[in-house]
Amino acid sequence: QVQLVESGGGLVQAGDSLRLSCAASGYGFSNYAMGWFRQAPGKEREFVAAISWTSPNTYYSDSVKGRFTISRDNAKNTVYLRMNSLKLEDTAVYYCAADAYGVGSRRMSSYDYWGQGTQVTVSS
Image (cartoon, rainbow, N blue to C red):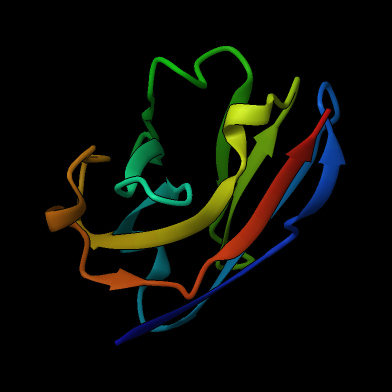
């Protein structure tokens, strides 16, 4: 069982940066691929970024590639999402998710555990 708690969201202006954190508790964090997804009002939840449990390899949606960076610190049981050059369209609730022995899937159905989400609001 893995529990995930996101933090670091907030209200920022377009062009600003934020770093989201997702702290995991439970057994075997290093064995999980971790993903970040987001859901904007009135829209479906979508993939943002993922990092595999080994190597690690990273993957990004086209909309955030070059602006966002996913990383993990297995010693701290934490995955991060560094978000630079934020845009209005990045406004959403951001969720982290864990996938046992995963490769960093873009599919929500691949993930076994989810956090409660943290709100990111980008204003003009």
